[in-house]
Image 1 (cartoon, helix red, strand yellow):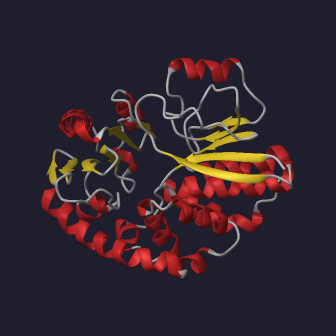
Image 2: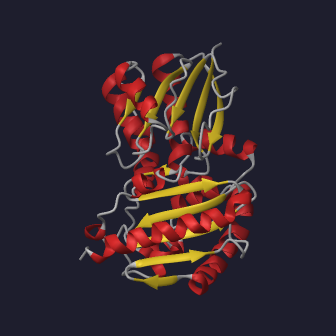
Length: 324
């Protein structure tokens, strides 16, 4: 029984959905006898793949950056910053492998993966259409309004919030397995979701007030620093809920594992988007998409994170000055 190791974008609904979809695809179209192991990965500077990353009989990466490691067989990604270095991109372009797929124009990895596997391998993903639709909506920030994204009434958005806050590995595995076995509304009613989500939603309400107090709106850009407020994770749409007319957002936060600079553009005002956020973040060792990205630093580099955030905010204010 071959062991398939799936590495995925950690604490991300699209990452979890992509991992779940890939396992169903592989069992359906490639090898029904396969067993699966999962490992979440977080963006950071340098090589984020350790020596044991590709220790499966078959190794796959979904919704995360490329590796030139010869043991990586399957790869699906849509991040503009999908290649850590120019050498990695050159390796991919020069030696394309039949099971590696990349499209930086795709809104979500889940939909890109599902459609690619349907087209290339004849996989029917219609049983998972609800999951694919929500993953694409969430990762593409296609919410009806900032209010919908912040008030979290939909079960899928509650699950998105749970994923972003959960750090228990056994629950990550359970969630990934259930995503393609049960309707999202049923999963959202599970005790392990509800019990964890209740305090998370209380903290979410509190983080709205913290960001309101810390945020500064100047020349089209909202910037804030919640690194000293115990708000290590927050709903990234809160700034647009509070400042619906803004162009860009830059935030600094601190968790037990990293100092983070989060950068975004207003998804409800796409005409005000001339800066490529992925390229900006890449200059500081981060990455993401043209519309949203982040820079992760060590916890002892908080002051540097604040400097980076300030520099990015200045650059985005210059961009906003030329936008409608």
